[in-house]
Image (cartoon, rainbow, N blue to C red; front, top):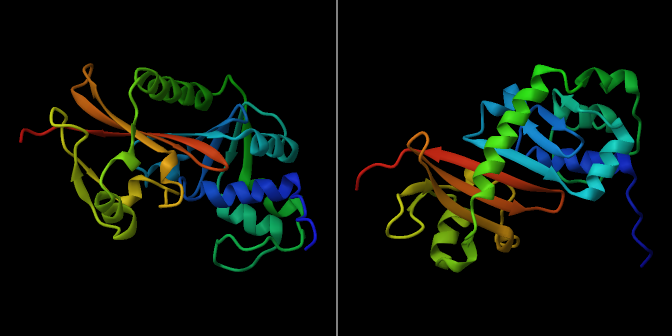
Length: 228
């Protein structure tokens, strides 16, 4: 069997867009060629604060494909991929990329660039600081694999919801597969969580740290603890 052909930077970017769509379904904002945030439309379909940290291989590919910028806004990740590859198939799956028939005049209008002076950059900084402040306060992450197999099957195989609490002194939180994009039984060992009480606003935060092949995801889902 011949050696597998190394993907080009452009192909890696298209692969990255396929995967990031599982987290942000429409538009994304890439800050400092490293952090990925939901755009306005994608933000409507997520439940908390989410940041993706791009793995070095794909960070380099994005820099080679789009250049180095403070903010890169992609208004429609699915449309960009289809226009770039010339793939007219309506499905967005992991099939092999078609031959490059790209023409920058077809897809460049889906991309905008902003510098650090733009309000978008400042807003993303605030979100990043909020998420990282909470994550940096956690020293005892819990592994999902330490909990009963039945619980994992209910969430990831049966696609059902469960009431869960980390320990007897922690509040209940309702968990379902939609809160864990890209997590499967095969990569669950890379999934960690922690429930944190946010004393400044009376809410609780269910924090998720998940390492995927193309990026690492930090997610915070906020909830109000109810009396049992």
